[in-house]
Image (tube, rainbow, N blue to C red):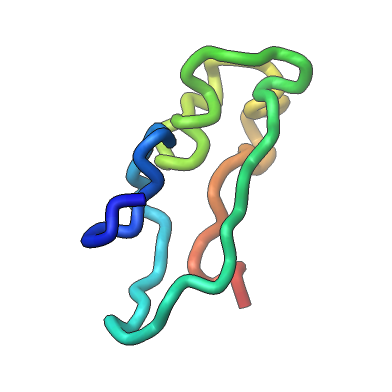
Length: 82
């Protein structure tokens, strides 16, 4: 780990705009490791990063938005986290 930043050196970091602030004196108590493929069964490519950074193109694959009038698969809004 990087003692001053708290990041695992060997891990690839993809900053996301979807986070909440943590008080400076609060230490992390949970580590989440995502093990997903997107679309299902397809590994690699830009889709996981795009999902977690809010930049996924719903028209790039039918799985991302199966119907133009339906909600697309994407990050939760702040109000839906409650």
